[in-house]
Image (tube, rainbow, N blue to C red; front, top):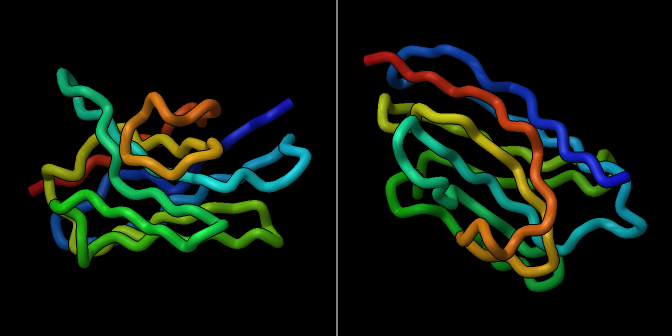
Length: 122
């Protein structure tokens, strides 16, 4: 059974950092594409970052470019999102997702975690 389990969210002040982790299990082979999405209250889920194992493609949402870094440790079956210089607009529930095609669009992903809350105060 495929599972994605996020952790690392929390309540922080503007300018602080957090590192989100997503442990991926149940795949016969590691998924090629992994991504991080977020959803703020009253807003649609948006793609924050994603990466492809096969071709090294990495995407960042414009508003997080230079502040967030996605990475994966295949030996640990874990995907990370390092978030620095956090802003109140980064507040939301963060989800990791896995699929076969790296894309910033949620519909491209087949498997999702349960989400972890990130709250950034001003």
